[in-house]
Image (cartoon, rainbow, N blue to C red; front, side, top):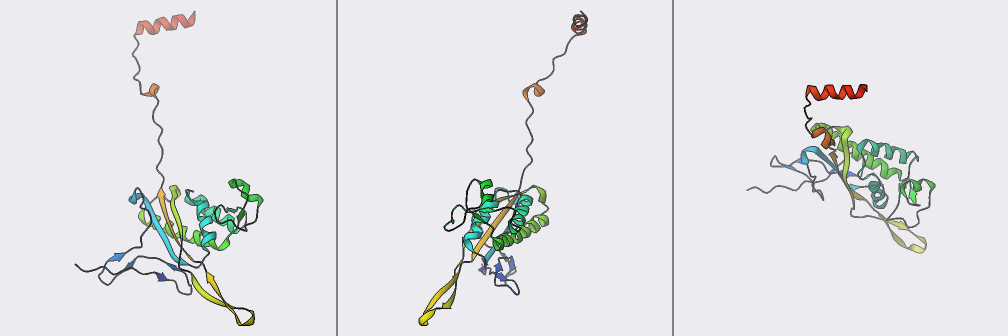
Length: 216
């Protein structure tokens, strides 16, 4: 058997960021990046992911947690509102030095920020996932963010020059993002026991008796 070559990240022109895309290999096969979880129903879900994205890990993680389990349309509106500073991103884990804001009360906490770049990257990733869902023939209006995860990527090293001839590290904190959208199933209410029970047949004499009693 021939060994399958490993897929590689494809960089966009004019950008240092990279999204992991499906890419044909030398043997005519397709290799796709791994996801940390598999959807319960693969036919009713779609995926998208970005690798080595030049956006802060901590801000992006908090923004991703805010939109987890949201409907797709609501998440897109929320990210637009974050960019416009109409809604805030609550900071619950990486909240050291984060100021307190009144808008964070809506999420039951006190600290929050408006990470514009993280919101823009996540919005673009959701658009990518929406396109994949449209290609698969899913109902976009019923999609929900079933899974979203942000991981640290290898830090990128630069240097900054200090006084007295010193040189200090000047590191960036990129991240990997993966998202899975699932089509929400329509909930049909079960019929009640009264509706299920067969109606008893009444004789004509009994019905005539009931009418007479109602007249009296």
